Length: 236
Image (cartoon, rainbow, N blue to C red; front, side, top):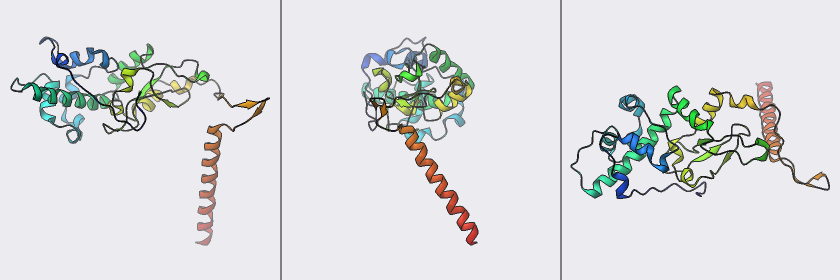
């Protein structure tokens, strides 16, 4: 499993580049076992230049990669070149995918996978196997691998699936999971305050709940800011 600081690495074998002509590149890519977590992005969405703004700076052979995704690629490439263009196409598709899943249609397609617990269930015993969502810790590629987010406890975990753990986190992005949670009212499923585990010895708590420590720290900082603001206003 990738650490938080590692960027995923991709390799493409020759047999992955072979697909039937009647099958589109997008259909072929999404049919790969390691691509089971992706959804198919509409061609119309990809052909709208506005939706691709800024992506060219992240992808070498951008134009060729885009042509490959849209099945407009020429055959005038050597075996080495086609492998490089293929890698660029998969990177570009992942970045487009991160934007497409923010649309209502894209979100609905992810919801269908979410209902089958495609991305796993929360390891926190307090969440009772609540389904997880894919999330990135950065919107830039080659920074972090994909993680999973629990709408119930609002925690981020390393995925159990080895195939999901090597996907670039930017292919799902930082905004999707929180937006999905709001869109489908998943936060509303919390019937009561989650009871986080606190280590105890003979019934006495050994450590304070870490979340309470963070909240207390934030409260103290906010209180200090308010006092400073009031003093400044008084001095003025």
